[in-house]
Length: 162
Image (cartoon, rainbow, N blue to C red; front, top):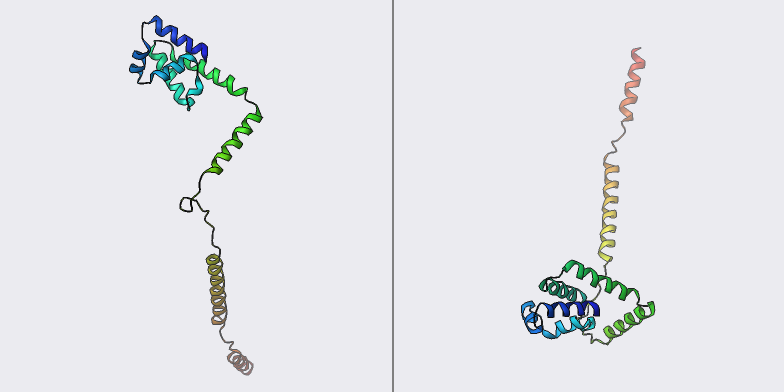
């Protein structure tokens, strides 16, 4: 990153542009441009904003912005690939501790909604009960009385006629 910053600085000086003029034209603070030119990426909280600043600064200086951003991406990859797993775990633990220290109010606390199964169970029992009653009624209503007596009398008349 320092090499990239030095490249920006030498190009700016060759073009005869002062730091104040560049900061005014890019709508950045002088300290932001100084940090870019000195290669101090830690002065920026957001890497994506820093990348946008670098792109706009490269365009402003008449440099090939895509190549400069590619160089910056290579720098980021090289830097992040050297972070040890222990450092990542320590940073995660530090962030969790930071969140635990926050004051929690009952007004801002998010409660998980619990699903109430009682209405579902009651509705299921009612449906089964109604279905059972309907089944019993249909079973009994469809039964027509057997008319054995009529059939027996027809059988007697046929014997007599024959």
